[in-house]
Image (cartoon, rainbow, N blue to C red):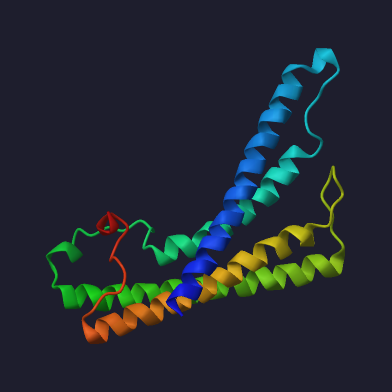
Length: 174
């Protein structure tokens, strides 16, 4: 299962990276087009609409890997003086909460997808259906829920057995 979850998280992050690079290229082309408007060029039509949808996708796509690698920001002012066992229990608790929050976000994103699909809303300039962006984000959101649920189960197991299979934080992975 660990290998499957790793591959799923890496695939989502790779997709997010590809989209992010494409958005950077598009933004550069759009800005260059604005700067060269006197030469008959112009901005990419609907660039901000594409950027908005693409960034939303990229954020969801990077969440699974961040969750798997314990890359979320942590404040360990109090936990640094606690025992390893207590820290394992706290980490298991927060990983479980994170999984529940990601499930809630995915559920509400799905509800938004159904609503946007039903009402036929489109973007202002490009007139593409808004539900497309919701559907694109739904895929990595579901991946994030799968990874977070596995991660929570792994941390709960570690709390009971005292054996960690992954770093406690991204800093300890180095």
